[in-house]
Length: 162
Image (cartoon, rainbow, N blue to C red; front, side):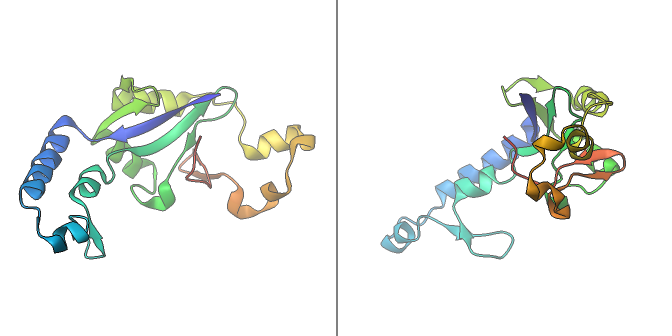
């Protein structure tokens, strides 16, 4: 069992998003064409169309990583979408708020301290399977499924955490 942690926006960032959402909703096209297009708007990134709600919730909840008893903290780097090293990770975490999977808020600095110090002598995939060879599964031998280390941080090869 473990605990997942997420970065969420600051209240002021959410308030700005809320104002944009309200503005978008007020200007929805109520014609048959607007309804037929699901009230979508041009996507700010230039691709496809999105709904005002999709724009509001985009990147509101970014999974940071997971702590599990007996294992080193595992970071989720989202294929470098938000950060690619320790310095950019710290800046990203500190730019928002941190919550655990139960909705409890933890200060960004307290979270970073906890994550950096979580079970330092714990397992990663290499040490675990070296000590427990009968637990080894064939896919773990594939490099694309191995944890990597970036600036001393254990980074999961997967972006799908449970």
